[in-house]
Length: 280
Ligand code: NAP
Image (cartoon, rainbow, N blue to C red; front, side, top):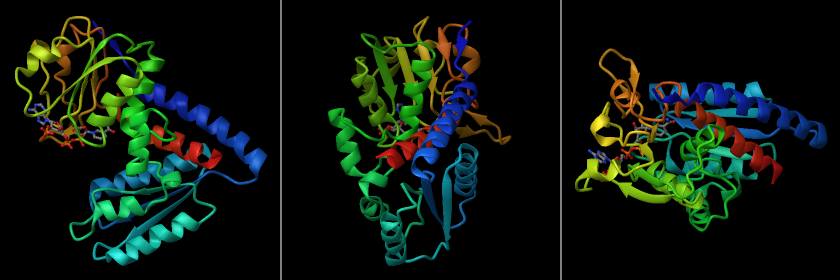
């Protein structure tokens, strides 16, 4: 039976550390780290994420602002808000909640955020810094996976690491972080041939594709560490991952559940990035 990597507990522990570091920062500087979250439109999932981010800021002692803009907001208005936040000394981190309504250009907005306040690490400047291994911020989900591995005593050095998924926010940076940690990394995607053969070589398998229960026992080497980034809603409304947990848990050496694995780490890493930005 695999060790369950408890993302909730690890996340709570890191948030406690951030809270302590924040108290020390405020005592020294006389102001708190500040995060501004911008949300455009009424997407219900985004509303929940934004509420949780604001709440998390409050819990660790940050200053936070949520800017709720109507769905019909024009590009110039959104750009102007980002410009104001870039210049605002109270704000050290800016996050524009994605996806934006279709008529808005996400790339234009992300490029406009001052890279030193880009706590999502989506700006090409920060993406480039991650490539060369000299970074201030890491994208929150892959950073959360690395923290889970580290705090569970799992070292990727010299291991075969297979990442399924090559998105800019999860798969690609995930592969790069495992490489920086001296893993031997393979990236798989929808055009990968003989996927199961590749994944069965993995000592550490990270799955980020967005398909419920896609990875079964036949795709996993006995004793592998399995990290499930997927978040899928079943018809009954329950959250489930990309890994068939019942099948894989008995053969893996360690596994993250969904919910309660990678999910709780994402906002925690956002807090970490905001504190880093404030310290800079
Ligand atoms: P995405 O942009 O849709 O990318 C999915 C990736 O999976 C693509 O690279 C795609 O390949 C690959 N893929 C799809 N079907 C495949 C198949 N049958 N075989 C092999 N590869 C396949 O998704 P994402 O934004 O990276 O998110 C992935 C999952 O993680 C989603 O469930 C999402 O909800 C979840 N997520 C969770 C968190 C968290 O906080 N826990 C954060 C972000 C995302 P191609 O490139 O070839 O199309």
